[in-house]
Image (tube, rainbow, N blue to C red; front, side, top):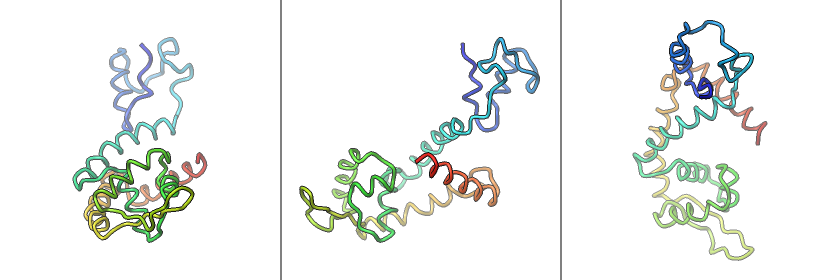
Length: 177
């Protein structure tokens, strides 16, 4: 069975559990014959980011579901609330989803009266989308829960650590985009 240390949580509980299961004291030297990494498990920050994103996405989905939104719908409403009318393609770029997935998403928001088109659009004509009063009201109901979920103490961080994490994540996203 491959080493499962790669899938440990941030606190390292899985590593400590695995060490105890192998009959070793946690924190002692690794066994190259039994470990997946010859020189010990390396720091893999992007893998940690992926693992963390799964936890965050699951919990954010619950936060948004409490007001009847998905995370992507929230992203659309929050983006449009900034005041710009954007096309579906522009929205897709801003919220980082594939343009092909925007049609159904926008249709659901239009059906619920959360957004509206600024013109009928059509082949080769841009049709901007804007948030409605109903969309703004729903967004305002979601925002307190989003702020609470993002509070440094909810993440186990100090305010300075949360600010540094945000700064670093923005650098990584900009570099990899």
